[in-house]
Length: 240
Image (cartoon, rainbow, N blue to C red; front, side):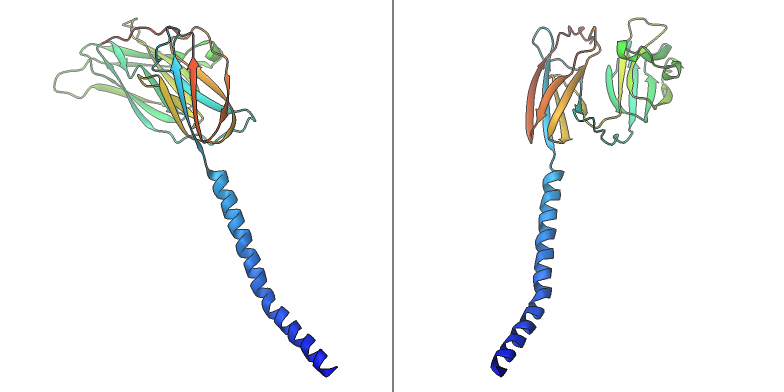
């Protein structure tokens, strides 16, 4: 009996001694599992959208935005500084994509005066308040001096159409967005969007020459997603 009692006590001491090690091992395994889960959740997808016009050719200067079907709102991107120049009777670039809160400097590089008239563009902005518009006057450039410039801050999301009171043919656009999942197509008609969460999305495309706002298109986002998106847009010929 004495031997048996001693054996039980030794076993109890061994079990007590190993419990901290077991708890530490469990905590390590749990921590590793949580770390792997967080890593998997942090993975984001790359989405490539190829936009074409009615003629089937690549459509440059289209803005592509993604929005989650579940209605989740991502954090707005950080504001940036942007330069838009008036040169040879044009706004350059013709289409700008900017986050809300960005500051834009307009500069007149022509030797004659220009206006910058900004107003909400398209039917979706028809109800925008008057404060969403602005007007600037920029003197013609004098040789040997810095061009006339003025700045504005874009504090509301939406699309602004730019014009000039003095020269009716001048036209430009600023697409102000509050989502990080927005991109402008290049000359190849491709918009590349990164850090997009996997799942169900709606794709919207805007172009300055569209007649009506296009309906959104469903998209299932996987780690690498490509989509061909035809539109009915007939793009104006760009001036050289």
